[in-house]
Image 1 (spheres, rainbow over the protein chains, first blue to last red):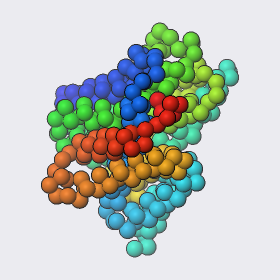
Image 2: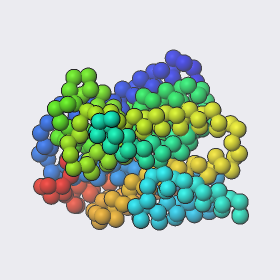
Image 3: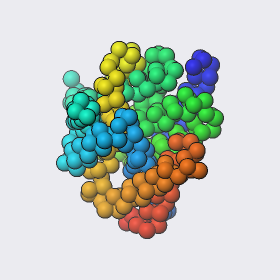
Image 4: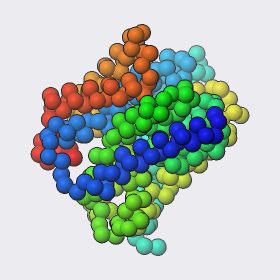
Length: 102
Length: 234
């Protein structure tokens, strides 16, 4: 990628990401009044991550079978409140093992 | 060492370890998408966000329009606004001046979760110590992935491809287990996302845009069907 278009993308990316975090922190001091907005904000972190994860996770390894096994491992470990590191490494390990067997 | 510094470092270490494999994957993907190792590392240092960076990378490597870049970062990272509002109520007077401006840069799902769970107010010392290891882990993980990706066996790279999604699952599932409304909102988002993915006409929509549409639709529906009470939410 050429350097000038990279820096243009980076500026937009980092600029928007900083503003999304900073503007509410620097400006908003009061509680949000709208019940709809408060509810919307309550759900948005999880719906974003859900929509990013599914169904893309099943096509992240080149084999739907190994990806499904890795997904099952991640769901199970997350259900029992395991840490990010454990969930990420264990699901990768499961995919590694399945790809050796199949 | 001041107690806030020690506690911040201690709370930040597991986050840094969890970030490493995910940012390692980001480094590999960025280089295979045509970026150089320093570009990949700079993205991680300046953004410190997982989902936003992966979405941003796909816009970059596809040569997508800047407006798609801006919109995807806005919507995917909109959840940080909520966390920032929440944190603005929780910081004490030590967060001021330049520190106040740099503070929100390091709001992430995991750093927020740890500091929100703390009963005491968030001091500048605690925040500075808390974020330093995750920033280092995220940036160095990207650098290592960008440099080592080419020499690692294909089988290992494919196995690491799930690390990002596994980290998301580690955030979604515990929350969904504790709140059935969050669970239903997630199921709705997944259903919308599958429709976009498997419908030929809709799969032409950029992945950044489709995540935006699915998340906004599912969150709006959930907000109407299951509005939060007075004390919950923001």
